[in-house]
Image: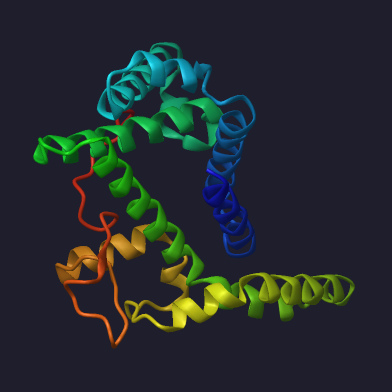
Length: 238
């Protein structure tokens, strides 16, 4: 969890630098509130994670509980909300945004588990670790752009602070940047590389999966991502 927490701190910085959409700000707020509850209280929207782990027989049962709770939360929201709220995510509260995401993610993983009937808890943990690592890595490909952006702030009164932040970020992420340079990445332009939807669209159009490969790494040894080819569940609110 500490590694994910450290990775998310960089993701937050990248998003704040590159994304200006109000909708994305709303999603970030929901993510921060949810992650705060997990790290500080070990709870997900009021659900005690420790109690769930003790009550459930395996990880699939845990995912099913998350999915069921999220579905109930969304169903309650749909009954109480009017059409305008339903159509505009900007008006959703953080817990609804988080519940919607949890439902989609848990259902996607459960569908994947059904295709691999013999997958145990260790296998599922490895699968989730790969997904998280690939998503973070895709986000980290924007680090160089963030550093350059911070060094080119137009407002003079903000430039000194921004450049200082850029140097601190460069010092903190030098090793990450070196690792990224060892791999071949999709030919996405900078604007598209900032959005995970564009990554998915690229792999879908080219019928490929995200594979982190270096010139000295064979395709059999490459780590394959599930981000680009896993079956997606339709948003329950739509």
